[in-house]
Amino acid sequence: MSGNAPHILLLEPYYGGSHKAFLTGLQHYVDCKFKLMALPARKWKMRMQLAAPWFAEQIISLVAKGDRFDAILTSTFIDVAVLRSLLECRGIRLPLAVYFHENQFSYPGQVPDPAAFQFSSINFTSALCADRIAFNSKYNLESFLAGIRGYLKKATDMELRYLEGRIRDKSVVLYPGLDFRLIDAAAVPGKRKKRIPVIVWNHRWEHDKNPETFFHALFELAEEDYDFRVIVLGQQFRYQPEIFSLAKQKLADRLDHFGFADNEKKYASLLRRGDIIVSTARHEFFGMAVLEGVRAGCRPLVPDRLSYTELFAGKYRYPENGFKKHLQKLLSRDRDDFLSAAEAVQITEPYSWPMVADRYRNWLLAGVNNQVNT
Image (tube, rainbow, N blue to C red; front, side):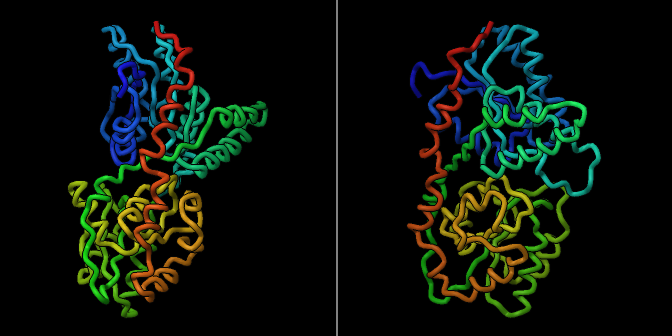
């Protein structure tokens, strides 16, 4: 980091999972000085409603003690309109950027929630009040703008449709950097003739990742006597879909691993043992988990929709209701045809931190020279 590097204040009310991985890579690879203020990854609804006043008080205290920052970067779990108003009441005006890992207009709820609009509304007003906005995929950006269009149509006696254009004009797509060093360093299993293909699932154990479609396809393929092994990874929560406990029983004799990997080296090593990395997600705003598996040498099998259309060629995508059929075809092929080491790097390298770091620095520093911080 250079001696005169700008000082960026990072605010993250949901410091876990992809949000944590993103900020860890950002601080390591981007040539800026960073200060991170974060809260644990829980109670996301409460975070969206109340994190802004909490963070505002922390920032006011830091500035009173003499700390100075050149800009703020936050995720969408902060109500930016509230944060900016509370800071400006105390004379603190900083360029503020928001990174959209997700948007609430497109996030599928498990059950209908009449109050869900309040969280998409917070996303909307946060985008209006931010100086700069970045989305982790084109799909995320376009689905957010589509949500805004539908939202503003409800205001039949107020003409507000122009606000969509205002938000689009200050938005960019910045794919999140991935740090592949541990995966690259993990040992590659030695080739053995007629090795049974290993299928990897490495997503959050939640309904939006649609584990039911994945496991029911495996149940049927097992009954049809297809040879395969399974590695199940991913973040677990207190409440999780019942299909996981059923899968642990029905696939017991095919499981090489079942559960969260307790450290990153173990996670990388398990990915290296895989041959096919899958997604059956109902929603995906980027797809870090699949890219990590591909970097480890797994052949991707993903839906022909969501953000996956940006990341993977058509030969790696399956149509609606086509997951089992395409997985069946893969299991019938010679595993040496799945994915070469060169293909794995070619697919994933554009999303590595060394490739995207400069874009992030340029985006973060846009407008910094015009800041006012009294």
